[in-house]
Image (tube, rainbow, N blue to C red; front, side, top):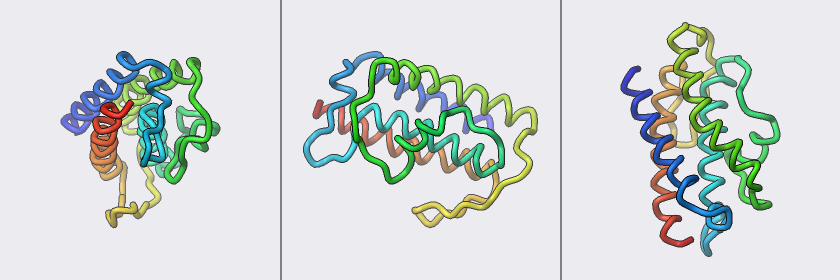
Length: 151
């Protein structure tokens, strides 16, 4: 699992670079033909990781219900993110992954409610969830690479 966490750190670092190098207006821009923007993709990565890893393990998540409702699967931008929200997302980008790595090392993930993903892959345990999450975040990094050329 060490390599899964290493890849996740790289992905989160890449996402964090968008927060460092783009203005609030750029982060909030939804290009024509798209449903979401850069900040939505970053927050969605965080929310999805928390749902896949913690919720389905029956453990408390590190993100608010409001953040989940705004950025979970199937949502789209309904209002621009504020500077305060971007600051929160920036903090959660690293803190949630660091805590997940600690919790995994400490054997916190004992139970898991199977979850069939929209890709057809069924997540059966936390190791599956962490592996699938790498795929999921990689997909969103790719979307963000396209979006950055349009903002």
